[in-house]
Amino acid sequence: MQKLHSRLRVCELPNRSGVFAMNDLTKTARALRLTVLALALAGLAACASPFRADVSRFQSQLPAPQGQSFAVVAEDPALAGGLEFARYAEDVTAHMAELGYTPATAETADLLVRFDYGVDNGRERVTSSGFGYHDPFWSPWYSYRPVVWLGRDGRRYVSYVPSRAWGYGWYDPFFSRNDVSSYTVYTSGIELKIDRRATGERLFEGRAEAVSTSNRLQYLVPNLVEAMFTDFPGNSGETVRISIKPEDQPVKRR
Image (tube, rainbow, N blue to C red; front, side, top):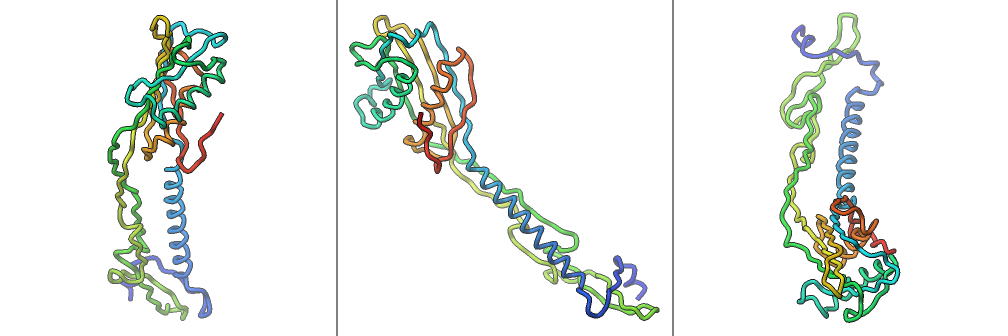
């Protein structure tokens, strides 16, 4: 009995009708599990946050908008005349017109806005949740059992001694391993070049790139165009960080 007394901390039982201390520990363990699960879900929610992208712009004597006309043309001849290109060209045209430039035909415009876009084939990225949990009392591999005994004063006491594995302790596979998952990320980008039609002089070059889990150009290109025209034309030679909204959110239109 003396050896048993020295194994672990000894707790006095309040009375025969008192609530067994193990119930409180069970509640604590469950609360801890819920807390960790909430943190995990918060981490997943963070995956839906905006993606970061970079916009680089260079300019040389880009004329003021007043009195200047423009036309959007395809940098890649294979895109010229395509319905998809025409859709994205409308976005570029709208932003240029908002700046004060006047839309015109490619044959009469003062400025030719050469536009290109694309997305790569993607690459796999592997991540680990990093969630692993071990409690010295409520261990999934080793548990403890209560032993009740009577003291010399006639009062009841309880001690906890090691029990066999998979005993009283709880087990949840979510907390006992690091979950590994993989997903594909894509790099998308647009290029915008503005030339003086009469002389071919290059006046502006810009590129916007973003990394996301989507390869849908219908989602990516409008956002990249919006990023390109944020604080247009920007400071020459400067690269600024922008964000691409999650795909399940509506694209912001100006």
